[in-house]
Image (cartoon, rainbow, N blue to C red):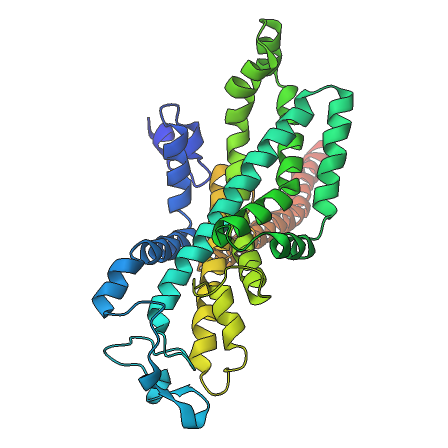
Length: 377
């Protein structure tokens, strides 16, 4: 009984060994052990909440993202906001925009809706197209696999920024711009997702339960839906979590180049475009969207790494954040100390054996000598 308790409390015990635990519970249990991932998840949840509650927050402030306030601009100084810190006050929580006087807080939270919405929409398109193409290539015959693989290679080699610039420049302005940006990013950058899905599907095809399903007479679609897609969930979710920050950066870059979301719709990339000449006169106009982008991309990247580690606990985390490194250093130091002590004890024992060997031989020789003397007598 005591041995079972000690085994259950061993540090290397994996929750996956508990037969009654479900996959979702194991995932959350592993994710909760990663403090950096939990902090990143809280930051992402806060950003999403701010984006969803943008109309309510701006109504509380009493502002909106499109109204001009010329009285808050000092035209004699070239359009710099009146007051300290860019016009920060009770009416404008983060100040106002240079030259126009539009409220920065309202534009920032509404810009979060556009940037996060475009990134999530592009990620959904990438995952859907990548999963369909990857599974079809892996389950098809040799010719279908070769054709889809070569098409995937073309899209992987295609430069995202150049193709997006070309496509966004020729589409009529009447088309909803955020939706267009999400579609363009998603339909160009799905190649890596398809490659990952194809490789994982080829691995799953060789497993026994898939072969048994094929021998039982199931068709290809039934096997893909019932046997392969559940096995693809973990790698696809992991890669999708890492795609979101990449798509946020792509949307910001396109808006910075002037082909993304069009004014007066706010976005973080568009705010950076307008702020590139005001970094000295009104630095908060540049720092606010840049800081929001930095925090969002960093939080999503850390969260994606945490999801990857929680779904595959055998893989070591690529981001050592927080006190984990200190704990690992202490564990390594204690291990080395224990090895050194064991080596010292072993050396001392060997030295003691060598010393005791002559004494034993001397003691053995003494009775032999006395016996010889008695025999002579």
